[in-house]
Length: 152
Length: 416
Image 1 (cartoon, helix red, strand yellow):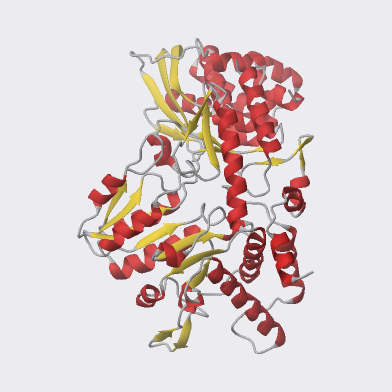
Image 2: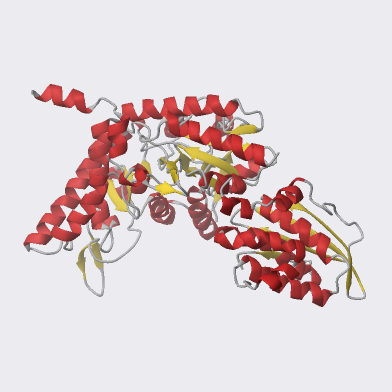
């Protein structure tokens, strides 16, 4: 496989695509949001349980490409246990990472597992795939119940 | 050498010679030779079409139908000659029936607007099919909203064919127009348009054919088909973008009001009233894409020199070969298995999203389309978000199909 392509489709991404974590509906969710990318038809339903400003549990369902599915899966694992503000900050860093604004190696490393999405910056058309789950998260955190679109 | 010998030699289908006519086919993508299989989106251009555009701007450029000077006269002649080439290609009765537009979408909007405004009233019905491109849905929805019309949709089978009995049932005294796609861009289905037109005419209903995916693959004879309108785009038949055709029967076009007002479409203008120009100029307001119209004529001459029947035969062989090879891969399901198909191969791979397929194939030099192909209702019909689509043109080879298949095998392996 080509190096640039391997950078995009890292093993972690392929693994999360194949077996996404937290891939379930949370019946008792108190924050939900729906994300949609009309350009490729990617869809995500996100369910959160938030208590005292802390994300206690995360679940998601939907369909999309490997990048969007793995991104949702990794996001769901990482934000679990985080405070709302922490999750919002992380989204900003993640967004900088996939759009190529975050270049400092140390800062990239601080992102932990999310660093596998660094390869997305070489594929401008796929940035929306990687960030859909995060946009949906922000909407859900801000008490969601609304549909977010990557085209707005 | 006598004339007959030259002509018969021209009609022999020589793939290598054809490929050499298309400079872009020499492109290297990610270190691999380009394998361009996105022809249903747009076709590549032969050198003579590219040269014609350059020639127009370097030695002919002037506004048409206006000046008495040398350049205006030669550009007007080239523009009108192109209209005749197109008229002959689709066997229209008269060049008055050939209207230059921006493309298929523009042509359909012209009919929706002009026909819709003048001939349709509250409660009237328009029939389309379940496999229309958005460009043959949305213009009707806009006029339907405005005029309170009803759009009726002919359902399609799992194989991607229209259910003809359902179509017949939809026709009633309120039906005022039937607008159908000749060849589906996402399924490849060639619709039984002759039968549709015959049935429609028995009920006195005119038919518009969206021929965007038919004109480059099949012999289209508007008199034999007896269609009332036919729309197609230049860029899908090896011509430039931004130019297309609306064919309409002269009698019908004469009854319709202009679509847009402006220069060139008038005979006389005062501030009180305007007399419109005759056909086809009544529908060509403003300075059109003159270079594009002329180069479209060149593209059509090129297609005729290769021979549309030879092209159809070659593409049909490629489709059969690709269908056979892809069917051997158990992870892949073909979407659109009509008995009568054109050179479109849409498919989904188990557990691999079309966008990942598209990115992977790009790195093998293979260009395909992934997504909903501007036919979201078709995707909904099959309960899929998107498909991958390979579509063939006259310059594609079996070797390119082999590259497609081996690339698909690679991605299936990586995602295992």
